[in-house]
View 1 (cartoon, helix red, strand yellow):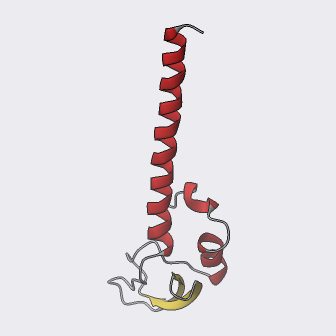
View 2 (tube, helix red, strand yellow):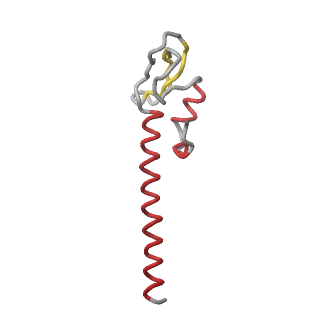
View 3 (cartoon, rainbow, N blue to C red):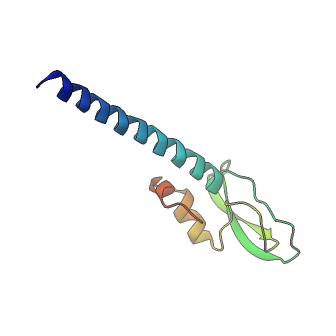
Length: 97
């Protein structure tokens, strides 16, 4: 293998490493927003029972949601909260819009 081929191979390894670190960082931020924030009722005045993930109890708990704004730690069902925030942490790449 010549010098140029070795350099290209090293460059590709570095790109993969940088991309992996970037994705892991993004996953941590997304997971933190989706499953770590305190429940946020939002500014509206409705009263819907929604669910949020409580890190202290490591479980999903109900809260009253006002119907608008809030944050991403806000789920319409206990099942959707549990699926997003417990068990395997593979959900970070499925970015919620």
